[in-house]
Image (tube, rainbow, N blue to C red; front, side):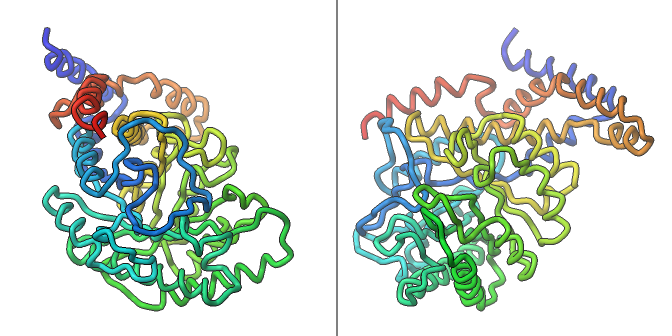
Length: 418
C-alpha cells in the first residue's frame, strides 16, 4: 500500500473515532488551514542583520552555535524562507527586524531608516502571497548600552524614539501595501545588571517615550509591546517588565506581546490568555522554548505550547490572537529549525481544535469533574497524528519525517556552499 493510501485510510478511521466524541475533523482542518503563523526572519542569519554599521551585539540577544550555511545577505534569507515555505502547510506571514532592510551597502543609521529600504521586501512578499510584520531593533548598536527608550540621556533617548517612530511608519506602509495590518512589535532590553534605586524614574521615562512614539495614529498597522523578565547582563531590573506593559497596554489599549521565553519558568503563559482577552484588544504571541529561561531553543510540541494553543481555542480567540515564532538556534540546520518549530506550533493548534470541548464543558457545567478529567486524559491518545498526516498530504507537503531528506538535499545543494 502506498504511503498516500495509508494516510487516507488512517484519516478515515480517525475521523470516525473523533466523531464518536463529537468532534468534526474536517472542520478542525479548515480552521488549521486558516491559521497564519508569523515566521521570524532572524533564524536564517542568527539575528545579525545587514546594516553597514558597527554591530556590537548584546542587549539580551545571543545566538549560540556556528553551524555552517548562515544566510549572508537578503537574497539568501529569501532563498531560505522560500525553501521553508515548501515544507509547511498553510499561508503564513514573515516578521522582519529593522536591521534587515536593503540598505545598498550604505551606512544608514537606525534613526534614518525609511519605507524605501523595505519596498523590495514588500514586493517579494506580495509575489508569494505573504504578509509582513515588523520589529524595531534596539539591540546591537553603539547607542544601545543598558538603556534606550528609558535612558536619562535625552540625546540617546531621542535617537531611539525616532528609530521607533520610523519603524511605525514603515509598518504603516507595509500594511497599506499588503492591504492587511502589519503587526509592529516593540521590545527593548533596558535594565540594570545590579541593584538600582531609580526604578520609577526609568519607567516614567519609558512611559513618556512610548507616549511620544504612539502619538501618531495609523490605520494599517497595529502596535505590540513586549515585556521581558530580565536580559543578559541586565539581570537585576528590567524597565519594560510584564507589569509595566500590561498596565500600559490596558491604559492605552495596545496589544501586549507574550513571548513564551520571557517569564519565569514556573509561570503559565496559557493562563494569561483569558485575562488579556478581557482587557486588551488583541494578543501577539512569540512562541519559543525556554530550556533555561530565554534560551530561544527551537519550538517543539511540548506541554507548554499545547496548553497555550488549547486556551486560545477554548476562548474562541483565534481571530484575536496573532501567532508568531521567535527563536534562533545557530547550532543546527537553520531551515530544519524553522520547519520543526512551525510544524510543532501547527500540531499544538490541531490538537486544540480536536479537543472534545462540547462534552468537556457539559461535564464541567454539571459538576462532573471525574468525567471531565477522564475525557481530558483520553483525548491525549486520540489519533490526532493521523489527522496531522492528512493535513500535510492534502497540502502536498512532506508527510511525517519525509521533510528531513528534503532539508538534507537543500543543505548539499545550497547552504553547504556558502
